[in-house]
Image (cartoon, rainbow, N blue to C red):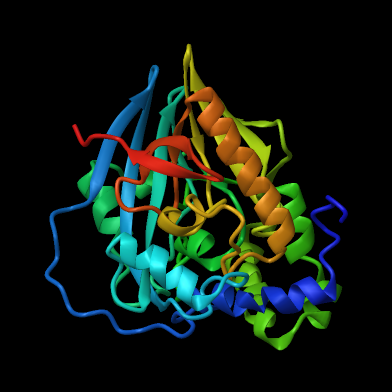
Length: 324
């Protein structure tokens, strides 16, 4: 199989009409179940450090999807068994959304933007939590995007077109841009994926001339280096955050819920556009994290979505950090 991020075949694109799951993030989630109503909690943000760098996890909320068909290459019985061992809701997976703010080099840098005002009712808490943490969206210097799925980019621009971070540079991966901005690829995509292509244009067209592009190995902000982890999307990127002898990996979507895909790294979530490439990336990154004892921050993990990875048989486990 080619490692080119732009070589996604029509077969994989059809499989990726799990990208209905991506287009899902446009307005409402595909196959979503309505979760029970729950009272609002306290503002959800969590501060921690990596060396001299200050990080803040900002929680946005969660989406609930049926467990059936959530994993593409495992039996429903096996998925349910693992889910029940971890006290998941019956027949459902709750997917949380957590972005990371990094204060580095005198700049306020945001890694991904959340789902904005285009998600289900159990999301949409991001801006309130961001402000509660003491941040001003007008003072964000840089927004770095890991990939173009809607739950990572929709927070850049409200559905009425309003830019959420009017003074920020927006940095995107070159490979991801080349894929999603290709009109021919959009026109030939399965119908379920066309909404995701249109959403990319909705978000980025007003600022396309001002975008900054990066490649694997580039420093996207002081102390933050982009690394390739293709498969979940054609140009999916993760970010190593380093200060002195301390380091952390922001792993974006190498897994969806770690209770499933850290434990069973060969399982493929319905949102992976190239399941085999995503599997190879997931195993490589998890192995690196376990070997290097490197702290990790997930986008889709129970809040505050950070901890350490250790090996467990043929898979891995996430040890959450102790809240402090």
